[in-house]
Image (tube, rainbow, N blue to C red; front, side, top):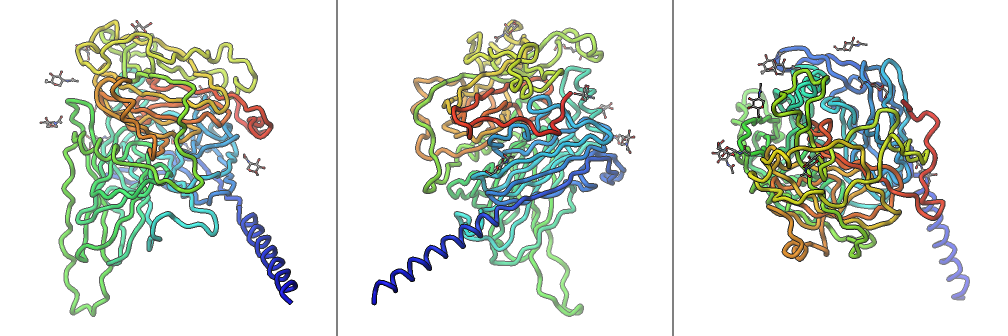
Length: 570
Ligand SMILES: *[C@@H]1O[C@H](CO)[C@@H](O)[C@H](O)[C@H]1NC(C)=O
Ligand SMILES: *[C@@H]1O[C@H](CO)[C@@H](O)[C@H](O)[C@H]1NC(C)=O
Ligand SMILES: *[C@@H]1O[C@H](CO)[C@@H](O)[C@H](O)[C@H]1NC(C)=O
Ligand SMILES: *[C@@H]1O[C@H](CO)[C@@H](O)[C@H](O)[C@H]1NC(C)=O
Ligand SMILES: *[C@@H]1O[C@H](CO)[C@@H](O)[C@H](O)[C@H]1NC(C)=O
Ligand SMILES: *[C@@H]1O[C@H](CO)[C@@H](O)[C@H](O)[C@H]1NC(C)=O
Ligand SMILES: *[C@@H]1O[C@H](CO)[C@@H](O)[C@H](O)[C@H]1NC(C)=O
Ligand SMILES: *[C@@H]1O[C@H](CO)[C@@H](O)[C@H](O)[C@H]1NC(C)=O
Ligand SMILES: *[C@@H]1O[C@H](CO)[C@@H](O)[C@H](O)[C@H]1NC(C)=O
């Protein structure tokens, strides 16, 4: 009697399993969008401004996908500028062709009708990311959210929020950002500061309505070009649950610190007295003696019960959060150093064996003014950014990735990016950094070649040349573990033992302390060409960048496929 019964159970279990599997596969969707990039006239600060935008929207369209989905975005460039789009934080496993940095993974999509279809899979990623232009300063207005939800049947590793809200923080210029950049390059100096900060593209106009007692997931993205930001909501505190689409241990705080390129997912409980509260974003300025500061606000409003007009009371006054001082590096560093990674079954942990160790100094420096730099200060020279004293020059004839594919780097790049700074000096001393021999930097297009699956540790060391500053360094193609960070010069004897090798958090963009260092680790398991650069956009054309060239692996599933047929070439 028992046997047929058991058989029935087994058959039922098998059918159920097949059904679930079918549903899961059937649910792995294709998320398809068309982006028309073109001119958009918007009114801000009492004047109309022509900006470059996607589909006539500012900020641009939100992309929502689930782990396992394929994302397909057809980009049509109707703008007057060269365009590329970067899917910031997407690992692009075996799809380096779709990464987007201009002249690194592709030549630009040409103006007046150029097209390219970006195609990539979302594999093992959940959380908040974003997309943005990756050519000149155009990402100032060409950006949007890219939200990755858990696959069907999976949950967040935290209580389900009632609602969620995307908070895109940005900067606004009352001029063409292409002109702003052009002028900075001609002068060989810093670009004009923005005239305002924005929240979801607005200055003071965004409103989040909440219900008392509910919890909201804020997906905060710093899309500003050149400034790190403090973010607060008056009368409320947060629990941070993810950064750069990597889950963190819950971290309670009333202030969020976020660098350009980074994202923070934070739960906010609407547990204040029902009323109206400002949310505010304010510049965090790490450069000594700098004076630029700006703040912008939006509203958090509690839903009010409908009253007959006779009983309606005037809305209560709005509370403003008390913001940190604009130069409060202690608060910034306190936030960054408090994050730890959430350990989940089945997710990889930090590699303990390291194949390659690098010490990479980075910051500013000077090079002689070029003849075309007509506004350049001939005494000082042109400001340059550098890593290990190489100021990265973007190739012009073809992209780094195309040259890698052809197996012919000659004339495009060289494989001699150094593992260590060529000259050792007291990196974070203002006096040592003022030596003109130390300030000079050389130009080159040098990459660091890595074997497939090589494990790499990079100690990123800021220098004080032209002023120590907290630079957010973004690595394409990988998430990395942030093992430790600290002030002053890195010292292996003292600092290696401070590494968190148990539950370090992962990011794609690390804000390295001003006049300090951060140690990161990753496994080079993604063949392609991956740029690592400062996400303060002012520093990218200065050359604060380098690239990793990762070899193909030994098996067919570890080989970068050929480029798609519509791949833009120069
Ligand atoms: C777009 O705006 C730029 C700058 O204002 C202008 O030069 C160009 O003609 C405009 N292009 C189109 C297609 O409207
Ligand atoms: C996405 O994954 C599918 C299934 O593994 C694969 O066939 C396809 O080539 C991948 N697409 C890209 C762009 O990597
Ligand atoms: C831009 O804004 C700044 C600060 O508000 C103002 O001084 C300047 O005149 C404005 N420029 C233009 C072109 O409107
Ligand atoms: C940058 O600022 C300077 C000084 O305020 C101004 O003269 C110049 O026009 C600005 N540049 C652009 C491109 O707006
Ligand atoms: C911050 O700026 C204020 C005023 O601009 C200055 O007095 C103070 O010393 C600065 N603090 C730090 C830590 O640099
Ligand atoms: C050029 O740079 C030198 C050295 O920093 C400085 O003293 C001088 O004022 C600058 N000249 C101009 C026109 O900005
Ligand atoms: C960087 O390179 C330049 C040009 O070769 C050289 O003059 C300078 O001393 C170097 N500086 C450092 C800190 O290595
Ligand atoms: C900041 O200003 C102080 C006082 O004027 C000066 O001693 C110091 O060198 C300056 N620091 C930088 C990085 O410019
Ligand atoms: C646009 O891209 C083409 C092809 O790479 C390049 O030749 C041209 O200089 C670029 N234009 C600008 C304004 O950068």
